[in-house]
Image 1 (cartoon, one colour):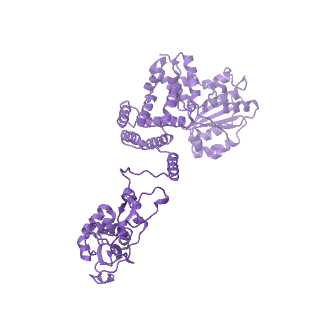
Image 2 (tube, one colour):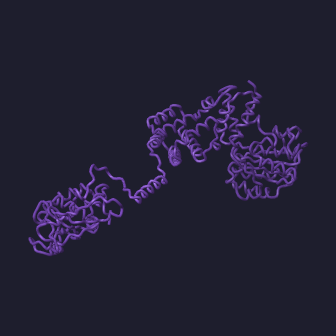
Image 3 (cartoon, helix red, strand yellow):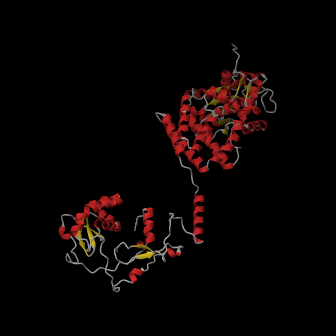
Length: 588
């Protein structure tokens, strides 16, 4: 076993500013500061893990102490540079903020800064994870940090810049390190593989770079792991097996079953994920990224922003147009909601299965623009003399040959009937009534106030006794038509019948208002059940208080002179047909 083996992250650690990947804004600034002799006395580097903060701090420490710098870069060959590289320099002190976070350690640091450097020109203190220092330690450092000795240089590094007090930040030059891009990590891994004699496909290196998540150190560590598993040659599938990563092909299969609305296949995919030992949360994150790529391609019409191989980019370009953008957005919302739910779920598999069923059963979106366009087309058709679509009829009625006759709800038998015809245009759809030929040739002359027709099943108006006898049947019929109104009606009782008006006793205002709003429907129900038509009124009265009942306008057994029925728009046959067709309800 070779004891001299070094991991890739250490072996390929950048040694000069030019070697730092993806942080040119920091490297150029520090190099220019060295060239102009305008170097600050304290710096703070912030950024995600593995992006080069500590590496840059060490390069800067060597650059300020190098005996023979080359273009404001450390030579890495002189004795001072070698001491710093090997970690035995007395002038460069690295401190772990997590384990040296007390006031006592900072006091010791304050004592040591008084002494001049042993060999170099600067004494450099590098404090990693500086945000881990306690409040007392930060306070103890303030004075020294504000006015340090001229031979001292402080460099702080942190991954959580928001935890560093503002009083510390204001005394330092701040440099924010970027996440390293996928292309840059892939290129560096390709360079390393070529130098190490390892044959790796571009897809495999891209997968490792994605797993690194913006960290060069993480990507290099994963690279070592894959090489140990696969040997000197590997492809993307072997990388997925080594890291237990869900293959991208599985995500394409997910969108395929969503497109086909194939619920059994979706559940089979869940079974495959579980049996493969994949983490459900990671699988959901992969679906979210996959749908994101579809949204990008669907929106931009290009695969430029999709960080995948050329083969997979072509697949996205082919599959994305199969989905509406609104559907992809709804899928994304459902997946992200499921991600949050899985975090606290006792059975993540169940949540994933429910999600897949929801997505396969989700109806497709309809654009509002399409609906408006269709509506505009119908409007234009009506203006041009067309009609709205209606149920097909075998023989449309005509007025001349066989007029369509519809009885007014208040009349029956030999009463005059209102004849109508289907309007040919919107203007003709207004209520219009004419007397039929039979009415014009009636034997008796038309009186000034024509008498109303009797109910179809009796020759006299309904009496109170008849209403009371039929009241349970009336309530049942009303409940069948409209259960809420029928239930309320069952809690009332008939009070009087006089002048063709049925007064219903109600216990409170809620019951009275309900009966009043639905009196037309109640009247129709009475006509159907009892065979006679009565207008409906409602009053609030305690059932025990019979004295408050309204006095009848006429004695029982006498029939008051009826009023002529007036035609209203609600009586128009076309309106009635619409009521029947759409189960309409009059709300006011």
